[in-house]
Length: 332
Image (cartoon, rainbow, N blue to C red; front, side):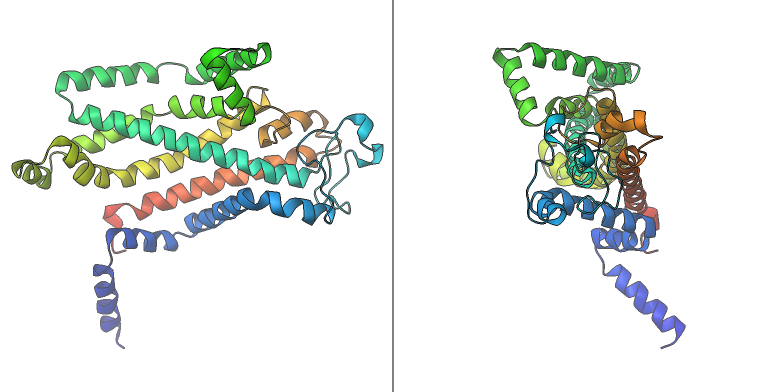
């Protein structure tokens, strides 16, 4: 087949693809994005099946407490601070004799839970706020965006720290009523509930701006005017015409924001305002062992490496999705 025929056949195939198929095809061509997606899929599988694989794999069928810290009196001196490669402990143990591999793999659940829940909350709130602002009259739009501008100037990380410190204090002191219910939910989730609230509810402002800008651009299109002329209401226009056209860039933006959520959770856990011990979090594991990094470096470097690889994977996937959904690259 000549080069011209091959080119014509490729162009015909590309014209036959839907926009979503074309985006997926371009994502597969993005090597870093594909590797990031594969790594994230592996993390999801680990998070889903860690309960059924780790005890048998590490302890030969003997189930030991992987998460709950052992009392020093219950742990043999020779089980503490074991180096990687020790039989039964592939990545060694920490200062309490807990297996580092199992705690690192369990920490995957914390990071992925934060990534998924915080991103979904931020996406839903930001999309709703931005679309309402974009469709609202000019005065309402200006008022809504001035509120967003105020939040941009507000030190959100300081507010998150204060919020976490308050709820940690309430949890220790005991509470009743609605606050008591929320504290009990937080305890049941290992200290993650208030992290979901803090990271998701307070990080939607960038998404709101993006959704508003996309809505203002889309609502001027001819097909929106045609829908209005046919009698479609605002609600139908939003769900049938606006939302499908702005969802792609918003999802890409939220994917690029996920590494920030994971890093913030690790930072809060590192300073003692994240998940509740003994729930295994990579930031908490680093916080508990960084003082002995010169003597037992693997205890900090292993969760730190897992944290770095996960944030890199989400960054690579976000870059790949951004290129895949760029309409200017369609057919390339």
